[in-house]
Length: 167
Image (cartoon, rainbow, N blue to C red; front, side, top):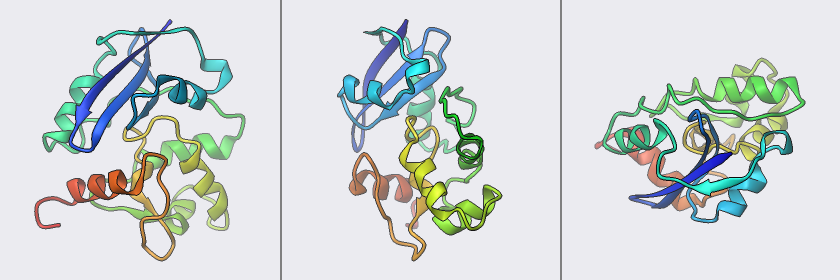
């Protein structure tokens, strides 16, 4: 059984879908649980019910929004892909530090395949656990925002939040 909970953030509602053990399988700036469920690989889907107890992620998101930009680092996520590169790229994505966004080119380099810029972009696009895996920290090669499933205003807010008060 999976559980979902939605809570308010400065940029709108944020919904988390997690296992009973608290591992996050989907997250995004939406209230549309069926939309989030479509992001989960079929191997990891299960019935889902509303439940405010989604494990430690609720407090971690609150702490992140209150300024502890590393609060999400310990949250367990579960995503599945057949591709070895994709899984590795998701692991690398977690290492991108707040306030230090990288371009798709740099992200591909960090992932060990400098020529795989499109594959790096695909890792961002297929990330089902927004915010926790910080795909918002990856920018177009020219340094502009590029796309974000939850909207560019959300991505821009997150990057400014992580850059600190001087931003």
